[in-house]
Amino acid sequence: MSTLAQVGAKHVAKGVGRFTELVMTEGKGSYVKTECGRQILDFTCGIGVTNLGHCHPGVTKAAQEQVGTLVHGQVNLGYNKPYLQLIEKLLPVMPHKSLDSFFFWNSGAEAVEASIKLARHATGKQNVIVVQGSYHGRTFGTMALTKSKTIYGAGYAPLMPGVFTTPYPYWHQLGLPHTTSNDELVENALYRLELLLKQETAPRDTAAILIEPVLGEGGYIPAPKGYLEGLRRICDENGLLLIIDEVQTGFGRTGKYFAIEHWPEVVPDVLVMAKGIANGFPLSGIVSRKELMDKQPAGSQGGTYGGNAVACAAGGAVQDAFKNEGVLENVAARSEELFGLFRELQADETIGECIAEVRGLGLMVGVEFKSPTDRYTPAKGKVPAKMASRVQNKCLEKDLLVLTTSVYETIRFIPPLNISKEDMAKGCAIIRQAIVDVVRGIASVSPLYTTTATSSGSRADGKATTESGLELPMDLPKALGGAGKKHNPEELFGAAYGTCFLSALGATHGNLNKGSKPLPKSTKVDAVVTIGKDAEEKLPGFLLAVELKVHAAPLKEVGLNDQQVKQLVDEAHKMCPYSRAVAGNVDVKLTIV
Image (tube, rainbow, N blue to C red; front, side):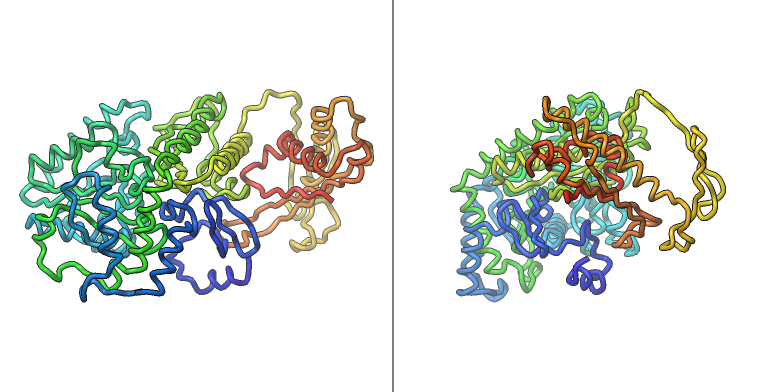
C-alpha cells in the first residue's frame, strides 16, 4: 500500500466504502492512471458520470474558461449566464416538449429530493411509491426511497415516512424462474402495484410513483415492454405523478439522449437528471412542465451551490459534444460489440451454463451469473460461488475497472460513450479472459490419474503419507513459530506447482513451435510461495500468493527470442492445471528472469 493510500486508510471515514485502494492521479479518455503509473481501462466512468471519458477536451476547456470569468453566481441572488445557456441547450433534447421548467442542484440524491418536494407541493399529498431494488441516493430523505441494499439505510431509523414499495418486473424479485416471459412479469408487477393502492396507500394519499427506467443498483434491468406504459396508465387513473429518475440512464447511456425515449408513449411528469449531465462536475437537476413547477412558492427550492456556473458551463459543453461528435452513433456501434461478446460467451457450453442473463440498453449492460446457492438460477453443472466479485477482481488484475451491482451475482459494464473501437476490443478481450479464468477453476475433470495423500496429527507436528508409501514429517516454518526442520505445505505446494508448470512449458513449446528442438533439461522454474494475511485487512484467515520465476536462458538455447519466451510463459500459464485450479483465488505473478 502506497504512502498516500495509507493516509486514506487511516483518515478517510470508514463509511466511504471502496472497491480498491488505488490512488488515481490522472484520467484521459477511457483510462485512469494511478500514482505508480498503472494505466487502467475504465469501464465504470466513475459510476456512470464521465460519459464522455476523462478530461474531455471540450468540457475541460469550457470549465477552464468559466473559472476565469465567474465561479459562483448564486441562483437565489440572480441568474448566472451558464445556467441559462444550459437550459437553452437542454430544451431541444427533452423527451417531450411539455418538459420546459428547470431547477439545478449538485447531486443526484438532492435532485431526487427536489422531485419529491415538488410532487408533495403540487398534489397536496404525501406518500410516494418506489420499486424494490431501486436506488435514489443516500441522503436522509433518499435513504427511505432506496431499496437496493440494506446497508444504505441501516442504523438510521426512523427514516422518512410515507414511502411504499412495490415489486419491479424482475424474476428474482417476483420469485419466478429466470425463463419467465416479460408479459407475465409485467402483469404480475402491475397487479401488485394496483393491490398496493387498494391495501396500503390509497390514491387520495399518494403523490407520485418514482422509478428508474433501467433499474441501476438493482441489477441493470430495463423495464420490460408494457410496464412503464402500465405505470403511466395507473398514474393517470389515480391522479398520481410519474417521476422518472434518469440520474444514471440519462445523457446517452442507453443509446438515447434519455432512456425514457425507448418508451415513446410514456411522458413523465418530472424527470430527474445528474451524473453524465456535466461529465464529472457536480450538477444535477429536475425538469417538469411549468404549470406544475409554478405550484411551489418562491424560496421552497434552493441551495448555495445549486446550478454552479462552472458546472453549468461544463454541462453546456457536454450538450455540444452530443450535438457535434456522433456520440449516440458510437454508442450503437460499441453496444453491439459488447453484447456480441456476451452472446459468444452464452453460446459456449461451459461458460454459458454460468450466465443467467445478459441485459441492458446501449452501454448500460448487466451480466447476471448463476449461483450455486440460488434456487432461481439452477445450473446443470458446477458454477463458481461469488462469481461476479471474482470476475471483477480478475478484470482489475488485467487492468480493467468494472463494478458489481445488486444483491445478486451481477456485474455492470458502463464504459465511456465515446470509447474507441480499439479500446472496446481491448476491454472485451479482458472480460472474456477474466470469465474464462474464473470458470476454468471449476471445470469438470475426466480422470486420467487419481491419488490420495493422507495427513494426520497437526500442521505443527504431523505427517503426510502418499499412496506410494512416502512419509513426509510436517512442521511449521520458523516464520510461523515452528522449528523449520521438517516439511511444510507451502514448500510442497511450491514443488508441485513448479514441476507442473515446467511440464506445461514443455508441452506448450511443442504446440507453439512445432519442429523446434525440445526444451533442454536445464529449463528451470522457481515457485515462490508466500502465506500471510490480507494486507488490506478485508479478508479473514490466511492467504496464499505465488510467484513463478521462469529462467529465460535455457529457453533461448532453442532459439526463442524475448517475445517468444513471454508468449510461451503466458500460454503455459493457461495450460497448467495448477494455474487453472487456483485461478480467481490465489494471486499468481509470472516473472521471467
